[in-house]
Length: 497
Image (spheres, rainbow, N blue to C red):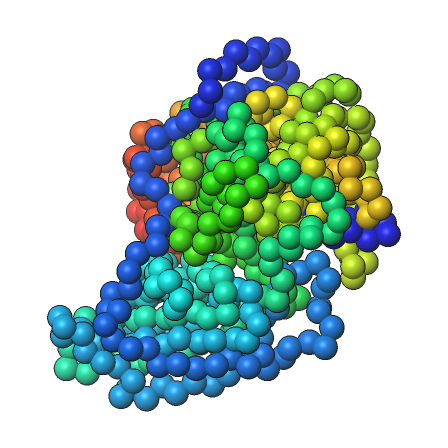
């Protein structure tokens, strides 16, 4: 957000690297992390025509609720739910398909009510290309607060498939619509940009960077940038860095969609169709460090990229080279080059005069710049080695950007990235860190995590999670190898409702 003050910008090669690490250092690497992200498929019954509806924005604001937001949330208009809207496909299954159009929308998402039948599967698709994502179960959607994945354009299709039965289930309810009114600003606010594809030597680190489509508070949505982070075990735990002002809570992390490889195929070439790119739906907040505007989240689903950025949590000297890769304005990937010129504690304010302070690095770019949408992107002090996360910059200087300091955030992040115990412990009896903004939860026997979900991201692949007996009302999707066991004598561990 570029204002008159300072802004929040919410919108493997052969390595020879050495460092004396006071806090921690890790080089980037390629990791085979198992299954990949969701890829577009064909919906279950494309031969059946969809019911067509038009979403006329019912709460379209006369003025955008936030000049730096990209969309807003509105109540969904009431749509028919007659059982006669279901049809049978060639396999005898019940299929309900509907396509919704919102004039002038740049992107759309819908939010379901929690009335989906457990036996149904949901596909979300682009009516123009037919590219579909799914299937999603009710539990899949519950993890994202029942928000669908994002479809870019003015139309979104929903297909619900129920098993063979005498009667179909109820037509699911849609309660909210995310209407996107701003996307792909090629003018990029008069700040010069450099297409990342024009720098082939940086292609591997670029693959680790992703676009975040967020659902924020205050009825708005937007775009930020994030990146996969390597960790000392090198086991491909799907940990993504971004800025705390992009995702400031677990409620904000849950419905976020992570889009991979949103970049041109050649220098200054045409953008690919973003609806045909892989994405990962939803995430959980792992750690926050608000004084440096940092956080890390764990993806619910596998990432699209196999390249994970390294990091250096030591002090960063002035006049060091700096490279940033980001999605300015939700645009396809860009790259910026410059130098680290200083550090400070900076106050950042948005257009509503909501402010926060952050300990940041000053970076002055000689090539490229950052704008809203670049927030949360990595600044690298070496090839693929992260030093900070983008917080903002002055409104009247395209060349200057300020990045939350990793060396300050390290006190919280280290327990997922470096100081990971061989056995990770969980106990629901500990209060934990409020809002995950602390360092008392470390996964050790003395300082356990208070949820099993957090432990599944911290545990080293193939190692154990030791859980104190109790009822953990969590739903987990585990796709990395690990062993869950009880840590104490007596009692039982129950995970789920």
